[in-house]
Image (tube, rainbow over all chains, first blue to last red; front, side, top):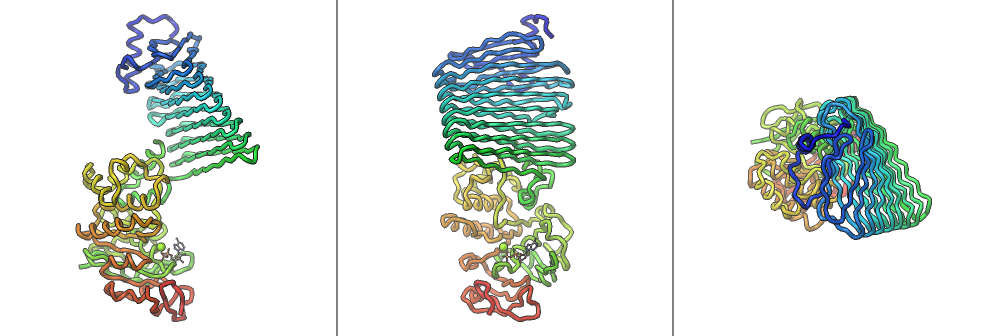
Length: 315
Length: 251
Ligand SMILES: Nc1ncnc2c1ncn2[C@@H]1O[C@H](COP(=O)(O)OP(=O)(O)O)[C@@H](O)[C@H]1O
Ligand SMILES: [Mg+2]
């Protein structure tokens, strides 16, 4: 996979990657970066956005900068993937959103034919003073479940910065997930993390979301909504530590478990300043009987009703 | 012509008789009310007719349009045209208002949806984008529940305390839906605590201690609210003749 590809081969792979995520051609004002295996196939940037990269043995190291005060109008699309059945892809990324800048990143991670794929993501993000970043990572996996993904993200938020992240894996088999997101929050900053996963077959899911509320008035909201069926299993560690006055945190952990699936939620909420306040709600179990009976009483079958309830939870 | 008939229905739970040899007939196209004090068994009766889990192991029989539905599941009863509006409607996560309202509708067109929302005074453009979750107020949630019933066009709808947990502004829409459902030919069984709701009915049944203690045309049943007590044998004091008044006090 490391030999140099011809432009024609690159274009062919880009087309396959985009087809697997149902994307078409991007317009000229949409920034996008396509990475297949350890090759950057294509990069298109817009004003205010800088991206450089270098190939690693088994992946790519990417440096991303959104310049001070730059407001990127459209989301920046990243497409990471491996088209063949097997392979290893390690993405190491360093992102800086400079003071007052604002951007949305949309990362598509696609392994449509995976039988034995390992995808490792090591992301370091710095969100500057008053800057904003929203990051949506959407996974598209094949039906085989042969993917192991290990996304690790470390975020630092300066004063009044905002970071929201969503991890979505609801189509195809999840495979094995080892997700670990942690944010350290400065004064008046806001972090919002959301994980939505549908596990089936023998999927094994481990999610850790953590917010360290170090700055006065910082806010952290951690949400994980997970549905499991067959023999899938999940462990969810949600952690909020509030060290500063007026820090506020909330953990929302909901899991629907069907068949022989198993789930464990471990919320840790810690308050080290009496003026801080952290709450958590967790619900694990079968489909809520009142929700179910409401839909049954409208004439839906149990299967159709369950499907509707789960689709809502994962939205 | 009766659409629903209960024949000597008895339901016991944890050694307590919640419905005691209960028989009643519900006439097609009419609005009936079930009144009675707190804990009388009104919700239990509705849950039993709908066949919710925990309310299925009964003695006696329940007939819908002449056939026993005792062995049918909730969804099978619903597909025959029977439905229930819960006193405290369920809150979902992420489920859209449009999806929810159309889930039980035969005609799943945008017109059905808009009309159902307009009937309960909710602006379709605004509410279609919302979720049936905890961000709705009690009144909004109840109105959306009634909109979903309107879209479903059931033959018989059981409404458990349709005015409870509802803001003043929402009340007229509840009455309007009751009238509209009746106009469209649905039969309604209103469970209520309030004389205002009773006024929407043609007939009423007075329930106490899981038993039917009185019945009659709506205008003869206000005595109950006016404090005139009706003899009643309370559950828990089976050998003692008691009486039931508005606040459920024994006399
Ligand atoms: N699932 C249940 N298990 C045990 N007891 C119940 C159950 N549901 C209701 N009851 C009891 O049955 C009685 C009637 O309750 P309910 O039907 O809710 O009264 P109402 O709706 O008239 O206020 C109450 O004493 C209540 O505690
Ligand atoms: Mg009740």
